[in-house]
Figure (cartoon, rainbow, N blue to C red):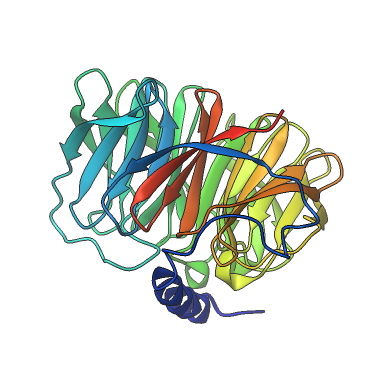
Length: 334
């Protein structure tokens, strides 16, 4: 088992090395030769360089720059920045990964967590402004939206705060492990009728029943799930990031680990489901991989260069937040 603190340090070293290679040309390599292209980059939208949250939905593509902190709105019809929303925080964001928080879009809003302030901002996409600031648990990290609920993984808990979007209030706080399992690399997603929480210091993905707000299962992962999660009806996926070169596959019907993605992976961090596939952002390989969800095998690959970390799906495309200072729009191969 790898230590997440050491993994974070390793990630920072890797990022530093990657920054020096941002200018490398994208294209095929010998590693890519066995795979067809996953798609084509059809737009590159400049954003402030550095780490930050990312979300697709609620009428736009949304990217946070932690150094601002500023939330940038991209119009998918024009592939251009159309608004910049200042996020007012009491405490400065750290400049290094994993950053100040994450974002999700849904239920008519964009939700941005602030790790240093223990809050979540609700962004009104009609006004391009902060509509509410909600106090949650300690060190909120990732955030997910399901029907009538917003779920926030609190790394300092470890716990999950459930927000009622109709009132902008926390209506439940759900513990997902002992205090010793607290981690700044916790993750959360919603899908397949459940809420799923990655707890690296337990080497597990925790399942929460949204009907009862109770933990109903703890599922052993391939290792520490230090990256993002993705959940569908028939599979839940957990990325190892710099804690391990794996993406665990979980069967949500049996609540058991049933394998992992097959193929060369180096630092799989970002995950997204769309176009009948699982998509992986592999930071160290500088690729976006497309996985066959039936076989768990990498079926196609696109080398994008830069620092690809966060993914989103929407508006007929796969979107990549590249920490070197751009958002990429990928049109998947049919």
